Image (cartoon, rainbow, N blue to C red):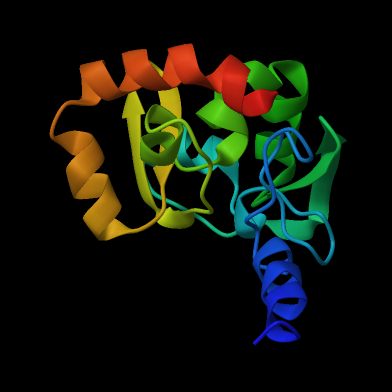
Length: 147
């Protein structure tokens, strides 16, 4: 079992469970791609998650962001803070609980013109139970989680 612990720790870090202190933007281990390659602008303009393309990419805050079109790329470059998900793209509910977790880009919500992502549909249901309260807790926790 002792030999498995380092392997498990390595697997967890490869799977996106590194701390926000080590990675302020939640990005894939291979390619350092933010929000698993989904286009952050599309949530606002298309009202749905849309996979981006490496053909339209931009490096911001140490991660590579993909976009579905040149127009979306230009919009993000002009005002990335407007389109980037909150809490570096980590799960909003997890940050409200004073930790980080990876996300499913299809579990999302825009609240007050800000994009929030969640780990999965079940976690999103928990987060949705008190969105204003969870945002307030996550906003307070993020500087500590960020480290």
